[in-house]
Length: 351
Image (tube, rainbow, N blue to C red; front, top):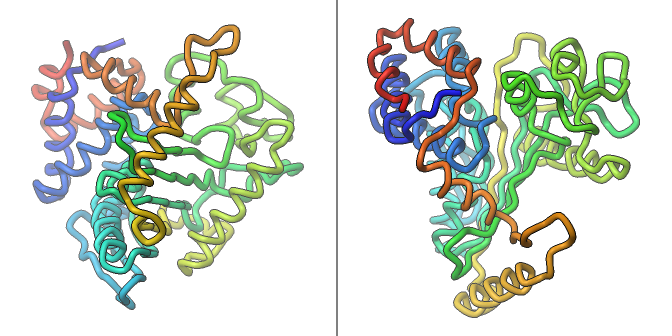
């Protein structure tokens, strides 16, 4: 498995997106998000997606440099139309807008439509938490192919419909939850496939609705299960509500439009703790609560208890020494790189 230098990988990813038409600043933004996902251990949302993004640009599904439009701009709310630009570029700007509104009026809600895949959802609520605010984001993939069966069903009718909540604190590692409402993110199936590994039980069903651990069954008409295993009705209920917030509230709709573009509809919410309590007191109590949870005696088989988000921070520290990339993923990246005349840049990235 190739071990890739993070800084070199960032330069390579940025060069690739500039080569397909993104402005330098936008390409830097996309690269920061993609490599950051790898560094946090979320390989499903890292450079594995690079060939997919480039393919969507070439098909016209992603429009580099498309205008960013703010509609119905009010003191605490707004609608954003990204006109099919990269999701990382559009969502950063939309969250910045929400943060500014919350700083001025204590609360903000911003919806986003017509943007490409946003990558790792946590990146945007974490912007709010770094500003001392509470950040929340719900996301949906529009009327494209669905991946998740409703609880008790055998046919996919929902997206993975992720959500994230990030909190301000005085800890070095951020506190957040970033989760799909399915048993796993769809792109994680590809990670297991590329590693030649079987899936954990309870992630997918095959095309006939039978439980499976074979990644090939997912590609052959299978579907993801809601998060929760035997209590999957809870994950299903969460996924349903996320789709209401990001599909219906945004106007994207529900169901599948054959051949439709991947459209990450989003709802971003930002709360200023200072509207309810002194901000420094809230931060201190969040910090104390996290330490209280972390001090829980570990159960057999566990070395320690992590508070939400801590493990990703430790993974980033460890993986900063080099990002392992699956052979199949790196081969696909090299094929894309070769088509853009950047093969030399890719070779220097591997340690």
